[in-house]
Image (cartoon, rainbow, N blue to C red):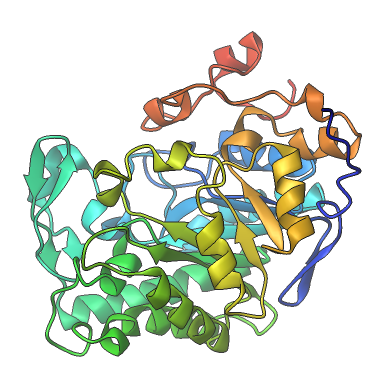
Length: 385
């Protein structure tokens, strides 16, 4: 049976904090690593994100940019740590906004996953606790337990990065508190074994996340949009649970968060049955998204294998989320929103490969096997030359 819809809900405006997005399609963060080796924005990167805005997304959130060098995971990951980064960031924000989308930066400290991995032991890889884990297959490493000064310095780094993003003209930032990176490491009882005020009880384990949020809010204007990628369920025995996330979500909103994503699992828990293949399952985060959405009165963005526009519209029609986040679907085809709005969903270029080529090429700059040949040869899908 043929499914028909006008996709009316997808193209309703969305109020996010003090800003209004033109529709409910969010370009979700996805690491493409088009920055340069020193951590600065490049023209390739500007075109990548500007092209996603040109294709019709209402909000464009960049991949995670590190708040300092210690929190950088990948070799071409952008860093936001000093005024030197502002000119490139300003060009990036302006290009996204020129095409009608709200422009946001996702901010991260990679914590125990900080790179470069080939020399992992040669620097302090900061984590809540020195808990051994498998960094890559067959390679177990032990990060360093953060000292109190390092914790305070990192909180300051998040606030400074957000302030720099606002100075560069971005509409807001999205704080990465999921997937096993530093903030989610503090939330997790399996990664956080501390016995001081930053660990142990639930209140102590959420302290770091709330402190980061408070510093971001303190150093930016009231109208600056702040989102949060929340680890919704660690999916590990004895770990952070969906009940924990539902409890934290209202605290984040009270602290000034304007929108949320619910993100299940970590890099570690995805390797454990029955979680293997989770991110390949259709709408895999919807149960967590709905649970978080029911706990707060700000928009919660659904994400996770919702690239079929009929599925995306259904989520919004049911009221399960306020918006839909798309990463890989907009990577392979930035005109997804434009084609859906024109009533041509059958024209969307799909993303069927597994494992995705974009992940296999991430270290040098992600590409997609399903781009047109001329685009693939150039190495990124930006503006037509």
